[in-house]
Image 1 (cartoon, one colour):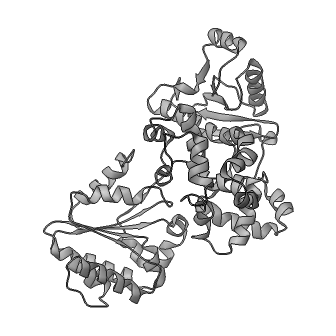
Image 2 (tube, one colour):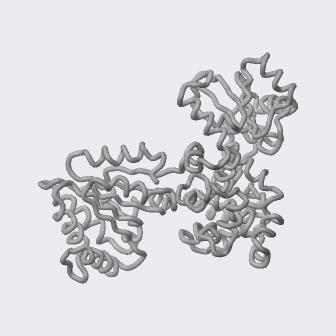
Image 3 (cartoon, one colour):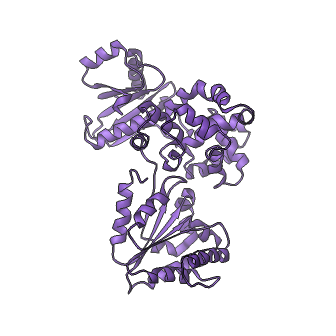
Length: 453
């Protein structure tokens, strides 16, 4: 099901409608929905799809040629890449779309592919043209290594399309039988990655989904957390150590150094690789005058499902093997699951605020949204416009929101040395009576319940 990808689909169609031929690089992390998107894009056009293997160039053309033989083409056992592409394009009467998925496997194996691809595209100048879509799940490689690897061929690329995670509002549409609280919990586990959403069933509770579709050894997601890491990185022992350490609460470089025993220089190099793969993020606080009160150098696991894996499964592998899934859930997940979800509830609230801003339903047009992480307390939301108007917010998933929370938020704002013009407070429960009364007399205080999301 193609959900929420209208902008990406329009971009692809606009590229296709241009005169001549194009070579487009489309990339995004695994399970993000690239294949579903290109299938929808190709549906009414002459098309060909090939999934590249991790193998030699000779084996690649053999496999690709054999696929074409099954499709009715007359092919040599080991054709050239140029010959493969030409056979595909010449059979169609209009502009062809040729999708080469996981193309990094071909590029890494040798230099022939890009040279022959460029030569083929140049040979189409007097024909209908062709649109080549080069897809990849290797985000770090595309953004940091691809251009160096392909050299001057990079000048022939028509554009880049990065497929990003889906917002929270789309998971609400995807799971109509979930209550809004369950949608937030599902988002905290699966993130905005549609391929992972397919593993959950909204006719079950979140607990049942976790037990049946993650903790059960026969489920697809049982080993997916570590598979996402090991498919793209060597030395899994080092990366597992760092990921597990961050999940255990060691967010600073010095904490990771003390826990892992690795040198700070080594940890920094491996963190850089994890950040490039979007598995880890370095958190930067919103820049305010209160710099002396802010925490610096904070690292978090950025991929929600990988975070779930290293928070609950990786540290308790022995119990995962010996306990029933229900016993494991009760012992290791249930106790702090609300605390785990609270971090993603903040992400959902920031998305909600950004959505209000897009629809011009905020008191001013916000230019930037972030968070401020203090040494003693934080601002979950801080948003400003170019003139300095400021909105701050607090997001509370674990308990009802009280007037004391409101006072604490104002105290944190003073430590950040900002003057809040507007205050938004989000809760998954309710607001106490005193806070409700305060909101009635203060027009700049907005109380938002989870059902408003």
